[in-house]
Image (cartoon, rainbow, N blue to C red; front, side, top):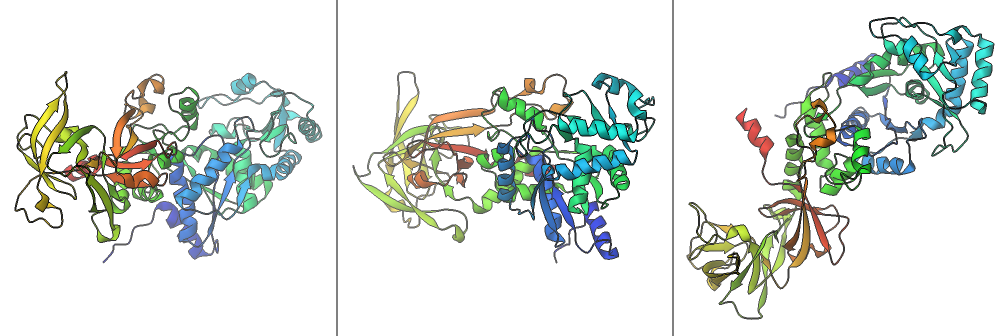
Length: 553
């Protein structure tokens, strides 16, 4: 019997609302600001919002919070849409806060007319000083007593472009002594003479997030507006604005954002990494962006499974990145075809194999029959891993050594007869004898071996460049460390191997498709690859540190 998964607290709220008849259906939204690429933290919010819509037969809007024209670009809009679709979700409507600029402006005028907003000429420094501190109340500014008529005129002049950036702001008139600092007459509109990616130069005043957010939710009739915990102090203002404007009462709920070890998830910090050249781009495979993880070879299923495993909570916690690696390893183990690739090549010459002869050997693509099989070319000269030969073998070393036997994966048993060194004492080739009657699947040799190694035919192999990625940051919790987070960047986060060889079946490998390089890990073909230069990114190693740790506990 399959145990039914318990509901998270948001699901409990939704089920109660549907059962009571408060709503007949739900409508959620995912509201990213298009000022950067989405990261794994956003994936948690995406899976939550879209997942709730799917589970309860509702819908989810994609709404871009594009109220800050100086930081937003169409490139980011396009990347966000691509990431959501790649994760497997479809939005009901594609919307923008800028769609509502006219309506939001009218809302602001309504607040002024009702005596709940005023134009303030104070400087940013004066506003900050008069706002007080969490332990001392704020003070009313000189302009707070302006008449409704004056405020309307000034606000309309702001809209008309009469004033410069920072010369005036529109503030909600609430309570300068409120315990919640967000309720001390927050700024709801500012002047910003900047070109907007959608509205062009139509506007020179823009609503602040706290003003646009709740009102956009209300316009769309969002039933459950789900935010992260840092927005708890904002909820009082969210509710106050809806109440004073007398509009559809959307309700805000907060959950714990994703915090993950060895990772930063601030778009501002990620932008620094890109602009200062610590990574090559937003989709650099070392980045925690969804596009970076996709390029590294992470699957959408593994990310969705990760988000499901960590769950939805009301309290912050730190998730071990090993769990994410476990999820992709688990998914790729089920679906990634097995192939052979040699990263540190050593020549193996079969001295008794006929000169010029090649044969195609049948090899399994995976542990299950459903994976199918493929033909792998075999010849007199092969590449094997240098670590699979030891001149003086260690105890329990079951690979090649002088006089030792080993099975070549899907091929024959060979015995090492001799080896060749260069002037520096490095082994450059080994000479082996093969046993023709030991062919895999039809072995009648009677020879028993304890080791199996992988290989590629030297004459058929494709040269490849391998990018081995490690964690970008060296400390477990970068946010808790002193100083600039960039000082903790791992100098060994990328190792490039230009001497690798892969089997010829990978010539037509699709970009981003995952493979298990037998005994080496999971890899995918990078988008920089060409027909003459194959580039593979390591997604994750075969070692499962997280699973071992959970067994200990």
